[in-house]
Length: 256
Image (cartoon, rainbow, N blue to C red):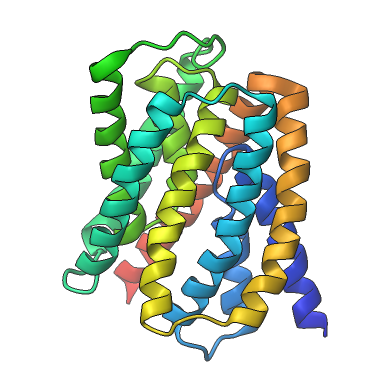
């Protein structure tokens, strides 16, 4: 009973953080591995995706009600992410993700430094592309981050937010809203793979999904209430935690 309470709290917290800037897996996945140390990692990751897709979808719906989502960017990016996330999941069964694991802390440090130094980054919503150019960039970003999510995954939501701020000229709030739509596509592709291979605990995943949705609703309300400045600050906090965790994981593997 205590274990399920812990998982519920973790799912709620993950949903809250994920709704604002992504990175909810930082909270939820370690708790799942701690509660079920002897369970197959693929089963835990699949169950995590089952819960996460409900939380992310709830955030996307809530943003759509209050924020004007740039569907001309979100739609092509989501379609590309759906396809390439599945390709990434297939590829990781053939090629180890060790290189990506070692490179991740370096990329995250670059993202954090760039965001911190550019104080005005994401403070004003000034889209840079329209028409074919917008769709082409959206497909490129969706394909790149979708493949990354399927192949490796940590920080996917945060990378999407950064991409839409840095390369599309969105403010942090608009970028977070679009990233939720794309993230649903990534989660759906991964869920197809895990479901096909039988790596899902349906009852646990749905229980955690309820908690994720509750946290997601609160997180969306906080983001909408406090605006882009709040999203930017939380983004930097989550990226910093990702840096520490990914660097520790890389060091631990190097020591083995």
